[in-house]
Length: 158
Length: 151
Image (cartoon, rainbow over the protein chains, first blue to last red):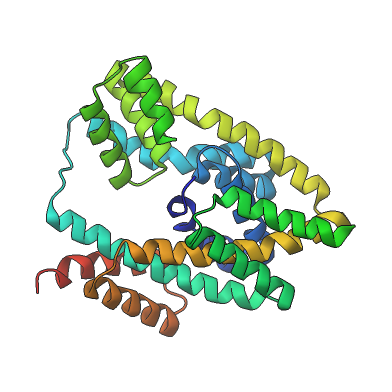
């Protein structure tokens, strides 16, 4: 599992589901990010099912899952039919570089907001710092980092 | 997922050559949507047309749907339990740390002065105009990515 995929959706989730529609609280969104990143499979579909279920039960989950892949499906079918071809031109590279830099900035802004809502004491800050170092420096899989947080929470329990 | 796909598609079933597979992954990466989903749809389409792409897409989605649904139902049942709240108290800061790592991940792939300018521009736009849809920020980023390299 890689870091890239799911996290690029975070600013959009925040905007649509938390701020605009108020389907989720910021805490619930963080919980869903934890779960969708650690479950196997397609992160986008995991997210759609988790949020869809919370909003409208099993029907909501199924509708959201299929809706989440509709546009990628259509795009691939068109490209694979040979109606258009996507070549690796420098211009395209530059545009995607721009999008990645923009993604970094958007996620940075989301991070800023979440820090204020989640980081409520020295324990939270140390856990966050450990998770950051584990992912960036040590390259540890997200699933294990989240499992670690789970164990620390469990430690607080007993 | 990609190494698993390579093993099944290229080595085991010989659906396509290694070179075609490399192109496919490149294509799946630049088209929007999950890479696993995109490549499955593409292979299905290449193998047996539209029906193939539908079957392949469903095949790669179903495990995600089933597992996520089970977890979602369980999470709802346990949401108000005290132990769940404590567990999540440990998990949430880790998610924040991982989100921080995601910023680094994306920033690393756009490491040049143009990338830095775009990063700063988007932060500035969002800071001064919080209600703006994030999609527009990304459209601006794409445009800047194209324009700044013309200089």
